[in-house]
Image (tube, rainbow, N blue to C red; front, side):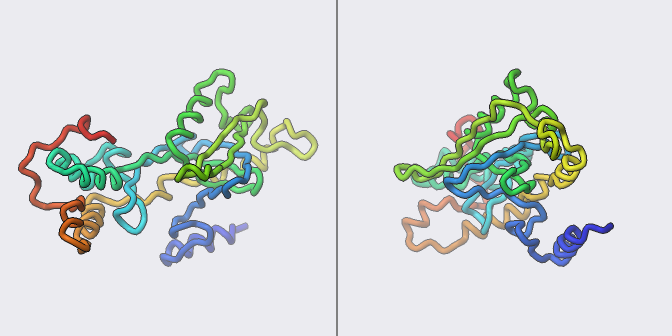
Length: 257
């Protein structure tokens, strides 16, 4: 029997329409936890077998963030090239502006959210990523994404009024469990249900806003050509330039971010 929901979403993608629940028109859903609400997540390996993936992204330049090819794929990035070439010759204010548009690392995992029974992509900070990596490398837990003997993760997003950002707290369950148990025995894997869940695993890369070199260059140029409010703003704006710099470019190690 044909999957009518799949056909509906596929048709929307082909017609350049927004797929319901898919964020910015991307075909895959992102997990959006509510602040203060507790969730139980099971990390699933993606189709390539990787439970965690990193995509560094530039924010504040285009309408939405886009993947940095330099820090993600070790390829040239117009934004990074410009920051590196202009860093030594720039004032402290411009350097601070450069920091605001520099690539920020984000980590991504496909998760099964037990409260909603949805398969979605979870985005989290490097701090959370280090905690998860420690769990994957801990022999006591082994492979926490294993569908037979894996471990669920308790997750909660909290906001400290004294801080400007929210914090994600995670804690592994004490005991391993199957991805989904049978109705009669919760400790026995329900193979049919597990297969259905695994069949919904999305490709994380397809949900990322990945631009080619020219597209990034045009986006950055459009950003830099926005008319400043004053001459002082113009001096402090990290504008892109096509002529390059007479000053020797900074080495990557000289850039403090």
